[in-house]
Length: 82
Ligand code: FES
Image 1 (spheres, rainbow, N blue to C red):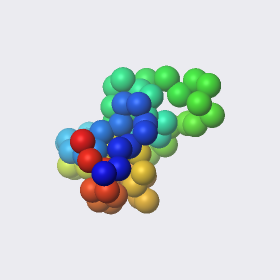
Image 2 (cartoon, helix red, strand yellow; image 1 turned 180 degrees about the horizontal axis):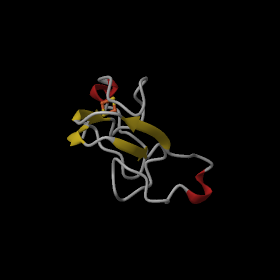
Image 3 (cartoon, protein in one colour; image 1 turned 90 degrees about the vertical axis):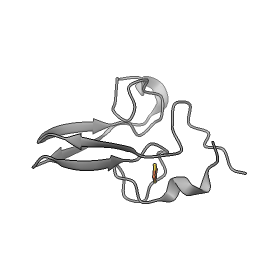
């Protein structure tokens, strides 16, 4: 029974179509615009992961913040319970 300690993290990926551009994925879990950065990391000492998507495609953005392939889901969220 593990709970993810990050404040606004989710125990599932955010699966959505991503248009070609740069994205700032929230790594600290404090953003209220998950899975993307809203600047809330401020004093956490953490920073967003910047990634360039070069073609329109479906992306599974990590919501739990512990993926080994950040910013993308690798299934690590399965160790957390809702
Ligand atoms: S949401 Fe799947 S690894 Fe984080």
